[in-house]
Image (cartoon, rainbow, N blue to C red):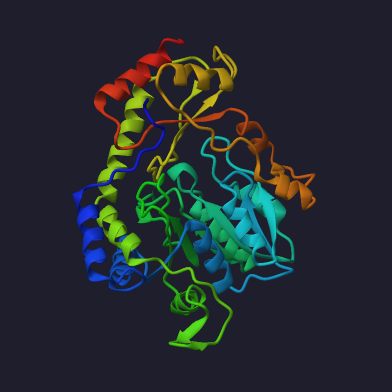
Length: 363
């Protein structure tokens, strides 16, 4: 079975973990510091603070920016639920914005419609590895004096006008979950070039400590371990290789797949799309509905996935919170027709050819 995602773990990752185990320093320490330093350098920011997950990265970033009860934060209605849940954890209110129907990223025009006097921040998601319209969103943030948080969970190494994502906002939040473009198993990172934000982050993720056993704020234990960081350092050294493979695989699909009604991924000019997912749209004219297509692929040994099957506001949690009337028509439509195909760097040339052949039989 060809998997829709597959992490690549090499000898360096294994050797690094063994070194940590032999050292006895299993919790946070030197490996984490080295990983943070290297990640800040890679992401073109001044600081990087490691966390336990992409979710805790978002939570810590919002706390560092003092988002609190009574505030509103605009988020896309189409993302993994953590993007919105992190806002709820602050006692603040997520306000859902629509997305661009071609690129799946937050729509600046709809963001403008959702701003109120309570709006304090925007979380833009570089969904599937395609950067959102950074220039337009930053201009909105400047005009309305809003914080910008980049959700880069699916976009390690992606670029907007030649500059790495995670370097544009007040904070950039990354995930290193096993399905991501690089992994530490579980883990996250917050990037920033604001020294004050970085200092708050370090306190927040370490029980609110300013120095050893001196707690000046309410914090959590969001610290990454040396074991995770040891894997992360090895993965970071290969992230460009991984991304180049994803881009090459995506280009192969886009050249070879030719079936009416199957809309292939679109890339805006000036962005480096790193294809965390290769997401197609099943439009009118395609010979079968999404469920049948998923079954057809599975019967032919190919796994696929739906990211995501409903708008966030339609999740039971948000329905219970009263999110009944949310105007995001593109999200409503796209959630019914998107499908992620395997594009990960572990795919072989024969597998790429096979996937195209199976799909093209439907032409």
